[in-house]
Length: 373
Ligand SMILES: Cc1cc2nc3c(=O)[nH]c(=O)nc-3n(C[C@H](O)[C@H](O)[C@H](O)COP(=O)(O)OP(=O)(O)OC[C@H]3O[C@@H](n4cnc5c(N)ncnc54)[C@H](O)[C@@H]3O)c2cc1C
Image (cartoon, rainbow, N blue to C red):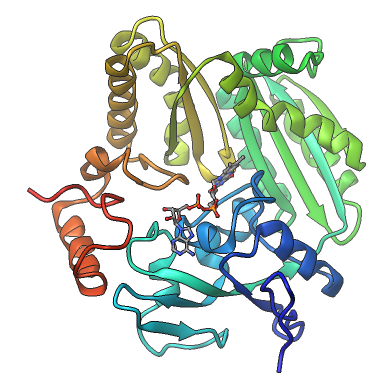
């Protein structure tokens, strides 16, 4: 019998590298529970102190290490949930091989609370890697940054954990907001931050891979392996949200693109916004390793201009065969645009699932599915 701790997290099953936890436990509590077994959780995000395992599952949260471990759906080895009529479905055995029907955990992941209330989750854990190194690189073009990312993916198999892209205007905002000096004497157009993690110090491996590719592309680089140095480099990326929020109330969009369309999207979205909403100010950053960019648009002013900005960006993304919501879900705000990414047949299948599991429509009504009619 496994013991349940006060935070709702059972004793770690170290033989399986799995744990069963209550949906209300936070990501930080899970990480603390996994650490003594030499394990960690594959998903990490800045909201670790408040994000619950139930909320993260319901939103299929991606986070900073998606590149290496996948998102929440990939970590779910089982789920327990209460359906709309009060019945409980529970499949928490966590077997590695188990082809006994529909994957309810996978279905509930990303369902945004519309199909059931998740009460417990069975989660896969990963080895806790003690040695980490971060490199921040500056480039003259987005294309060069993405070429180097492609090279690093090949050169660092199994150790590359994060790859974040941001731009000169975002770094200016961060430096102004925090009173920080710039990362390099040159103001580069595009910045790539990469983190590698391994059982033994990966600094030499990362430095060699960076040297190989920065010799091909004009670039600046800084590499840090101690905790303080790594946090200093991450600050330029992680402070984007607070620096943008301090500059105004942005329209926040969260999109994903095929890798081949990412570099062209960066100038194109600026052109499209300047035509649709003159005077607006886009600030882009995101998880380039996942093809995911956060598009924040400042200075939209009126609700009409904000809606025009949203519409222009989402149509551009859909036209490039990207996703109008990479991480944040559809919620209530993106429902009018769901048809850009999902066919009528797919939306009809969504409605059939909803009707089967929640016929009275009491679970998160007005979320995800467009109004019928
Ligand atoms: C600073 C910050 C950084 C973030 N970074 C990332 C990131 O990098 N990647 C990413 O993907 N996300 C990110 N997020 C968003 C994050 O995924 C969500 O905020 C979080 O995972 C949701 O957890 P929560 O407990 O706060 O859920 P809530 O915000 O409370 O709920 C989210 C949704 O899930 C539903 N829900 C909540 N609990 C349950 C349950 N038990 N059963 C069924 N439905 C439920 C709610 O009804 C709601 O629709 C970030 C958020 C913040 C604030």
